Structure formats: C-alpha cells, structure tokens
Image (cartoon, rainbow, N blue to C red; front, side, top):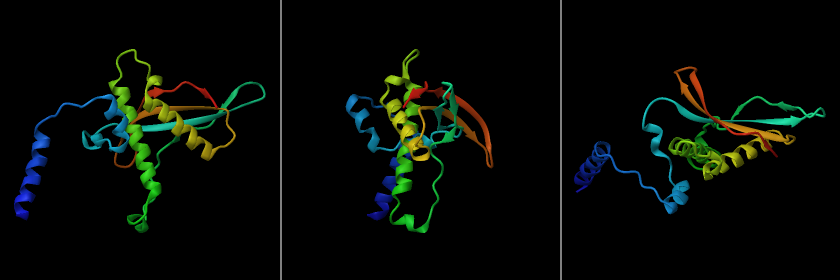
Length: 170
C-alpha cells in the first residue's frame, strides 16, 4: 500500500510539471495569498527581485541629504537552534515573499497602470519605512526601489531597476 501511495505521489508531481493550469484570480484569493508562498522561485533561473531603500534628512538649507541604498532582505545567519525556533528567518521569508508578490503585481500591471494603487505597493512602503526606522530614527524622507538582480557564483552580474518609488515625506 505504501509503495502505491508513493508511486501515485510521483505521478501527481510529474502531471503538474507537464500540464499547465490556468492562473486563478479573484478578490478573495488575492486577500488570502499572504498565507501562501510564491512558488515562482524555481520557475526560471535568472533575475530575482530585490528591494532597496534609502532615507534622507532635510538640511537647514532645505536640501535632502540621502543615505546609501540598503538591501531590505539580507540573508539571515543560520544556526542549529533555528531547527526548533526561528521567528527572525520566518519573518524575513515572509517579507521576501511580499517582495516576490509585489514583483508579480508589477509584472501583471496593465500598461499605464499606477503601481501606487496596488496593495503590495503600500505593503512595500510600510516595510521600507519600518526597516528604515529600525536603522535610522532621524529621517524626514524615504524612497524604495525594486531591482531585478542577476547573481553569478560569487558576485552580482547585472542589476536592472524595475521601479523607483516617489520620494515620500515621513
């Protein structure tokens, strides 16, 4: 019986690779998608979405002094204890899942559509504001950027900016 279930499982996996299913869309599924990971990370080898942010302080002259761009999702350090309890990495994976969903929303946005109307855009805005607050408490403006990054074995091969948000006063 176990062998039969094992064989059926692999037949189901092979069937899902061969037959393409339509993309299911709807308002309720859109709201529930935060609970499900974006499985496009094995879809193709190539560019991967990365979220960058920067903050600015307004000088007395009225100019903005910008910080360097920082990567929002750096890799977390793994430890043996994380096999039992790992909230920091789980939070990071959830944040990266949001970035992947944002990229997919931008990719599916009709020509001339405003990305600021997307729910995922607002989520990216909140995420960048939260991360910048943790790093630098005293800033007056912020901005984020979605970049498509092609990594090689040891270094970044190419980076393309997909979208840069307007400057937001905080």
